[in-house]
Image (tube, rainbow, N blue to C red):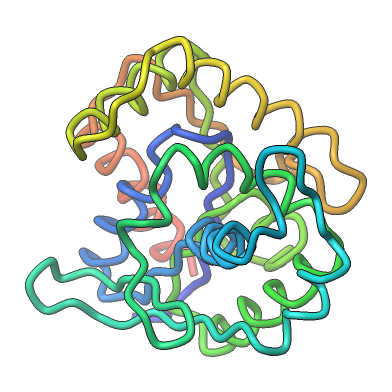
Length: 230
């Protein structure tokens, strides 16, 4: 069966990564969570006090980029790849609300995006990949055979994210999470370099009222129909 490139873009907390993981696993494809890459760079910035309360040291972060090594390593127990930052597994740390609060400002830095887009394009050279993020169908893989743009209401996304953080043991309020989602939407959609937007040839999927299984079946159906036509 001929392999294709699947690009999944969309707003934060639409569940892109979750459904993309399952889709890749069912197809035997490589899965890449580009959001994890931006989160890892953000974690590096926070750990070194480049970003934070009243801090915005973009220049030093840019100078650090050659020293930032990102790698996905497969976890046999979870059966999914996890994010490693300079040899350290940071999969849990990058999912905190603190990282979420700063990932969009870090991700809008042009030099950061150039470095990570180059890495992402190299990962997809052989096709047979499912990659999700904000600019996969528009910048990373503009020629991807299948492009999906996922969206959902702000309240639905905030509720999902809030429950996820509570399940991880974080002490957060729904209001904090809602504000974070709204702020990230604005920054992602209005940044000067590679803003979040739906590719002209992308299929839009509003999953406000859809469960994971229904989303998976919908996307899996798109893939099979596309491959059958080739």
